[in-house]
Amino acid sequence: MYSRLDPCEHRPETPIPVAFGITDLDFGGAEKSLVQLVTRLDRSRWSPSVVCLQPEGPLAETLRKAAIDVHSLNVRSWSGAVGAFRRWRRELIARQPAVLQTFLFHANFLGRIAGRAAGVPLIVSGVRVAERRAKGHLLADQLTHRLAEAHVCVSRAVEDYHAAAARIPRSRVVVIPNAIEAPSANPPSADRSTLNLAPAAAKLVFIGRLEPQKGLDLLLDAIARLPTEKRLSLAVLGAGPDRQQSEQQAERLGIANLVRFLGWRPNPAEWIAAADALALPSRWEGMPNVVLEAMAMGKPVIATNVEGVADLIEDGRTGWIAEPESPASLSNTLLRFLNDQNRWAAMGAAARQKAASEFAVAAIVERYERHWLGLLERHRRQVRPISHFIVPNYRH
Image 1: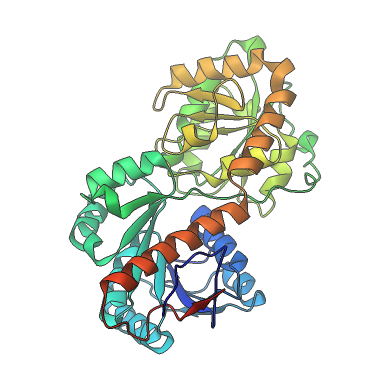
Image 2: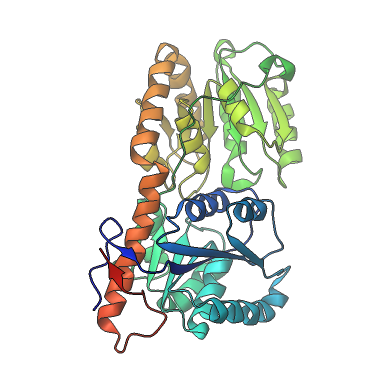
């Protein structure tokens, strides 16, 4: 006899096998979120394993240190997708998971097909961003979304966009945001004097890949519009195809002495600690992890009003919000930031409190567990007979 599935009231006789799939395991917001989730699952209830499509990245070792099995399909281009499908299908048949949870488009797409072919009872896709450029991605989602029982979106705005664009019934979409582990103490600050920047009223940090999505060009334009006596300095952490173009833009705007391009850094938290605020001028997002990281460290944030930002930032309380795609609005928002200098500490404290109370890791992990268990219970009631894939008997 199967009893009601509730992670707080019941434990399985044996851990439920749950498989995860993701495009890669390099350092990135989605990748860190997956590692955070997988490593914090209750092992008395869940037996996790991870597949990544591309060759292994550095986070694979983090998972192995947590005694989690990781398998790479070594896909280097779409030409290898058929072979990857076959290998992933064999992997799933061997492991017989009750749930397959995937993250990011390529793993979502291939995982739905491989999971269905392997007979996985429940397939859940993870939607991390409102993808506005790759129309082919939306078409693929429209064609295959029915292969998944549910789609987990990281913010309300992503839910709205993806449900409409991919034509997914709202009943199959749920919002579970990213999580953040609040540090017990902030890391040591990077030495701001080493940047050799011109004196400025405040120090901002930008962290992200240097590409159009992240909107660094908008931020540079906005800084150039500030009155000379109100200008601020900017440390740019990140690599990407737009670096040279961004450096040339700073020169052209006459603000090269206020901006330093530091490239990719393994210790972004040190630069957040050294800054007065984080700036994120994105054109689109999902739920930006870097904003959560800054909030957890007690730093206010200046960001454009794109997907996920309104879920995180309360304008005038934990940060400042500008209109997207508008250097003029962003410049005015920077002025608000500069004029609020006596409130920076209080706003940072409010940001830290919000991150800790609403986005704690334990609470977000439990939301995933409850979602999977609810789907498994519904599947149990709908499918007869119950196969060996389904959740084992629960006991008090």
